[in-house]
Image (cartoon, rainbow, N blue to C red; front, top):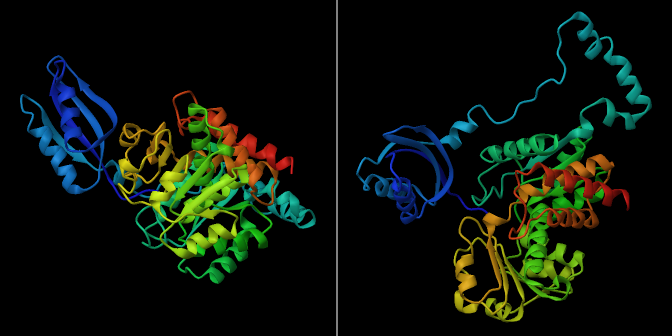
Length: 437
């Protein structure tokens, strides 16, 4: 679960003496800024210039951080504040390019007319060869109606395009798949389903992205029934895979048997309901859900889950708590039971800070910054396509979660999503699970 936040780069000059950067870091912390990457641009005998990436909740908070740095004095200067996020998106982040060079008439004849006709006829007589002689088997349609873009809500498909491009970049960089954004100007389930059915032959799989609840459930279920290719709503099942991996890692660290534990899910939107279903598919017997909307709880019951009366009752009853509500501070320290595992996954403002949960008696606590679904969906789609699967099933998703756990180092909740090995392991695990079905 993500909410809007601001990322800026601050160019800061400090005297080249020990302790000066610590003062800058302290000033950022006092302004409640979160430090990201730090790049040294110049390191001389007298001064050091650094490019510091910081994340803030608002422009006002950013202004406070800058004022704090400037107030240090003694040669500490803010030279510039740049928006590297906007700069990175100029012109878009993706482009369709040829894999082949056209440098001669022979090249042209091979890739276009007249040579291409023989390939067309080969596919006509052997349709299954389309995956071999075209890009179809390596392409994923990234489909959105723009109704649930990050934590920004219903901002429309065009405003959501940067997210779709981001997904395409990740599919390309991590597993070599081509992601093609498809922006729909309708939120009607019938129209969305019919549109995807009419275009699906150009893709090996369908990735549903940032489609709001509850219509996302109907759309995915109908497409799974009606299309012969893998379909997955990442906000549901991609998130659930990584959440399951995080829960398994937390249980491993605390010697808890996850299948015998009582697990409570606070928030039953797309992600929350999917996490419950994933846990039940894994074999957890006691899965409880809580949501302000009665229809959300009814959906959980229809899938075999259980509901509970109140937040206080859930905190008293459950051994493991997972929260995806987007409500900062929802879980009060006095609600935490001794020895609980608490994953407050709303980001950047969790339902309870991990430090507060641990201080209140939790055996293990983490927030959404530690659980990133980037580590799941690229490998899931790669494995499904490599296996030639017609659907993405729970055994495949559970295999993905277990592959993530197998590559998680002691002290970590999940691996670093930039580690290329984990995406390869997820893909292979999903492919093997698909071939065993």
